[in-house]
Image 1 (cartoon, one colour):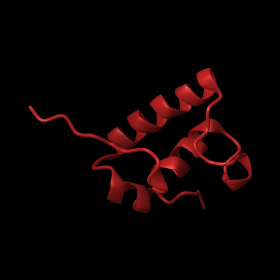
Image 2 (cartoon, one colour):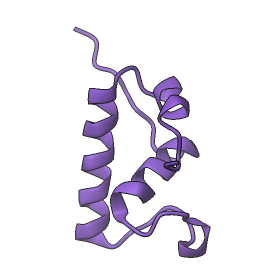
Image 3 (tube, one colour):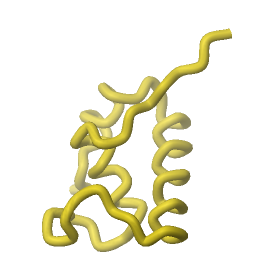
Length: 68
């Protein structure tokens, strides 16, 4: 089973597409800046994409929707 659960993440983000978009942007930021919002020992995932999803689940990433 994958961690964090996609069901929990979809309660935070409206769609799978938005989830992928947000996680990929944050993952690239981690690679470029080497800045993490949690202690390294707190992450379950070893890869930046999984760490981005963990940050999203823990409320450290806020998703703001554009209004048209």
